[in-house]
Length: 595
Image 1: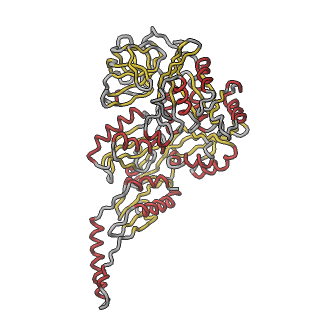
Image 2: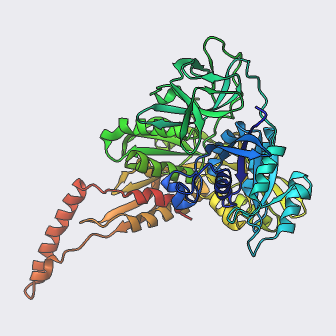
Image 3: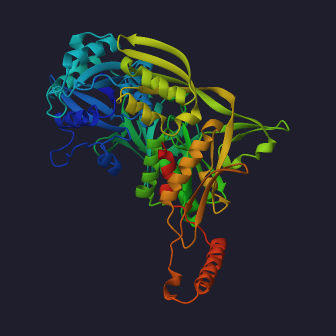
């Protein structure tokens, strides 16, 4: 165990984590020149296209140092806040972390929140200054920031260019000398933490684990703590670029287990694996439960695909444990699922993965949060969907969830951040200067206000510097109004939203204008209306496609034209009664981008 080192790479988006991982794999000759490609660990098409890491990836490397062979287990992590749950899982399986900071950008939002997570888990931090070869690099200034943040010595910060490979060998030496070897007892009962899992259509579910105590042999009878189910370890091994089978995996190692599990609900990320004969007494502390921020309905385009969609979401959940879902139904869209996401990017990625990996065409409804409704009769219930809200005359009051939002930013952006938070009904609780130019602002805000575009706006006004973290506090009464969208007098429940009474008029008007652009023209006029209860607050009309029926009436009496126009009007009226307006998927998505 003295020659094993488990470490992860944490950083803000685009600071060079995947590039540094590429260089480490090249230096240790884990990847041959023939197999090498940029972002070698990012194996999803979406990751390559967008240039972002969505999944954390584990890989084992061998490194010879002064005649001694070391085994290095690397876990590369995402940088975007919507995938912070992946980071927490990687951190739980490691003893050390490489903190990568871009020499041209300095310390940014996610750097700080990922660092705090690593420090909470007592990880050894190795600070790395990347992109040192760039003309815009500011090594001295950024080193000062790192020293301020970590309290380390300037000499401890490694200067690296992951693109050219400069200084990467020093990183490998630092991992060997600074990161502690895993602690654990090989003779103790087996204790292994599942930190990820994937679905393979031929082998069933493959679980990735890190052994803290004991050892696991091929063919052992093991049980999973949370589900209390027992399995034989049909195949175990370690994670290279491809999975490599082994007959035994020992304490401190990171590996995988295949035991022919077919049902997705039998594997929980964060669970503990132990032997049936000699079980450990208590499970390893997994990572904290995920808290979805955004809820949205996902419905199959074809109602017959409902069961297939359920199976697809379950398989996706194995690979992305931060996705939560429960069944629900809608008058407009039929049966589907109400899913919980960590943010709008997460929602977009899940939708795209359903399409690419499982070939599922889905419709996503407007995202929202859950509310508590108190009726006149003293009943209390939770509403996850505006269509589940009773009529206004039965409601005594509605309470909405509030959060404590913690924003860390540069001091020059404080004014615009405060304006944004106050516009979103936030109440300032605290303001602290962490360093001369870094400030922490704490706001109490309604969760419903941050669902749509709060994070995007925060990033743009702070030029990407503001980091945003939150935790729920409690529910508070609020003046909320249910805004319905009617097409030809018929409400479309998938477009209903609960919004604050003061914002309802503006929001309704903008939605009508947006839908007018997106709904294709029909043979008849389509009325788009926004209503609160029985009161219409905004209206737009999609004009009919006109056919010039009077073209053949040249000359003669005007009544001939009138007669034809009246006849056409009756036809249009009849058409409107039986006509069905299809709402394109872009209309549901456009609501998210309303400014």
